[in-house]
Length: 139
Image 1 (tube, rainbow, N blue to C red):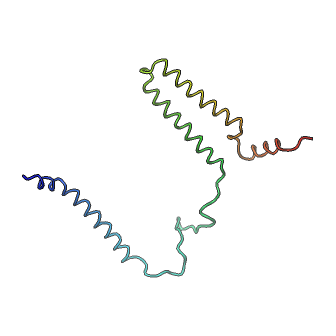
Image 2 (tube, rainbow, N blue to C red):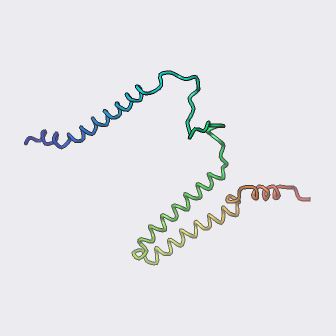
Image 3 (cartoon, rainbow, N blue to C red):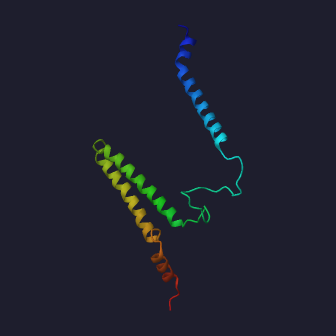
């Protein structure tokens, strides 16, 4: 069998799949066009969520503390990934690897203590009262 015929024989399922994808997409668009509404019924288009009419803005302001929590989560989640990776190779790395992971954890704990002392982990009403008390002029 010639090489081009063999290649064609190998690739025909891929061509059939691509053709079926195109026919399916075109069919869905055609059915949507045929069965869809022909005119605007006087209401502005709005998102539909369980029959509840949306109120307010779709872009509310989010406090920066939530972003801080997300960043802290990512940092300590990556720490867990590195520790699990180290745990799989703990016998091969020996004492040097043990001291390296202790140093790694110590650096992260030092960063956590620093954030805690700076007040990065304090937010909400209690933190606001504490900051107001610290900023109040002493009598």
